[in-house]
Length: 183
Image (tube, rainbow, N blue to C red; front, side):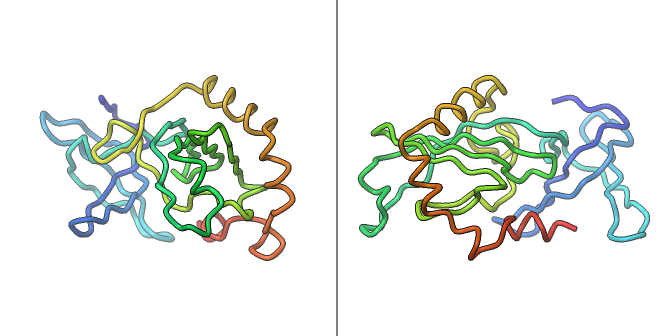
């Protein structure tokens, strides 16, 4: 992926062998092997310049992803009989999923967004997502049209009224806590 000075990006900083944390930054310069970025500081702190590998950067902005879903193993979970699933995400500006659809092998579909984010079947994923193709980025990037088609189908599915009937936003809060805590 090529970057230009002035591009807004996320720098995925490795903080341990298995943990990476995204920091918003601006591309300042391009070298043969490294990209110089200005990492936004906390509060009023001035940006810090860092030289990083391009594969540690991801363009800022929303995108759409199709990925393999988690395997449900609990015998008490109604989804266990539905089989494996694919998960479709709309990833927002801050890298959080803002809409998601789970499509199961048996045809069942679950859908979540910031207004209906938790119910008796599951919830909107609460982890920031890397862009596919980036180092460690799961899934495949898809077009907005494909996502919108899957989203519309899920909202017309027989499962959607059951999701609405088991909504838990009244107990858990009207907005996902990880989105409120962004600041």
